[in-house]
Image (cartoon, rainbow, N blue to C red):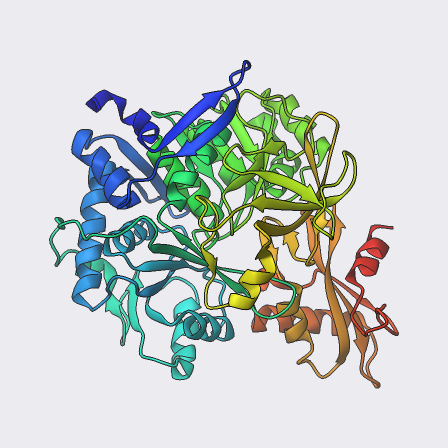
Length: 552
């Protein structure tokens, strides 16, 4: 492959066919037995075109850095050598809490090269969250930011770890931690390839559900190849352009839009490392750095519209996509008026890659998630597994007999949950839709009540567990409620203990309590007090009834 064609690297790993309109209609992954994204994409490009731009990074303090693929190779090699020297080895679980710091990319590539499993995590974790994740996944090491309070949460949790954990700190030194930034300079920037198989575990995410604690979703190395569709055929990345996906590195959307598919297509990614989201700042960055392709949850677009987009030069944008929650047609129309760009919605899960989408070349219907990705055999079935008719609501299922590229290996260390989701030859997504006469899919909701608010997936169980610890709360149910700005917000419906009254003061107290006991974004923005909760005959809370009441 010629040096000038690194933008076509992805073609080594797939076979594609297109319909008469130029829309992707067939996609067959080509997976080398020893495929490793860090070696076979990043290092490969560095060998053939070392100066190709991989990333433009800036933060909200005025710092800026540009990294080539050769830079990424060298820094990831240093990081790998550092971690290896401290005993991190193939198969180890390593939790990485690095916000949008560029060190995240050094670290994830290093862990891929070592053959360790990365567990990206949000900096909003509390002590309780850290204890659960470390012990559930048998975490061997943590690479953490010194910014904010999360490193303290790790230290507070340490006494409850079931085994010793190596700790590395970015952006500062601290007793008991290895100084990651300083130590990188002590290690060589070359590394002999460490053998692995494409079917080895590579990446693990904790994914929230409505019952129990978050499940552990684990992917193998083939997951990276499946994201070619995400970048090339949904994001429509431009090889010499800059792609911006708005996502913290603790969330799955980051590797969807800031890593695998984009770099396999030879495109540069843009990273804005900020602490507090401000629409005007992000609009300014799009203008300043001439972002070419952009992806964000509908909430971000709503904030853009509210801010007023007419004051910014967004002419560099050639394509815009959205996912994470249902897209309101009004947002679609307003964004089109401002930019002339049609928002191309897509859908996927932590357990999958892009499953439904309005792919490049297709004509979107505002509010529809589009059509099935050619990577998967997707059907819509009723509760008995029978395909539903056009217009009827059913659950999205993916036909999958065993290992399937782009689909999780399993729920790690949880055979029961795996069997619940994956049986009779199908993976059950738990998301319900209906299909129109043209084959477009329209989102209805979760079968398991997970709340999608401002791009976050929030499990009601976690919030309910915290609220139940407060002395004023007898019973509670957490659901999503419609919001004109955020799309959906967290709502808590509460039955109080005797002696308590549902005053504004108590509401603020409960909200603050949740903020301090779990990640702040999970707190209920709406609190309603009721004498009793609607329940089934078996005593289960009927959240569906609460959600319907909230829409009236």
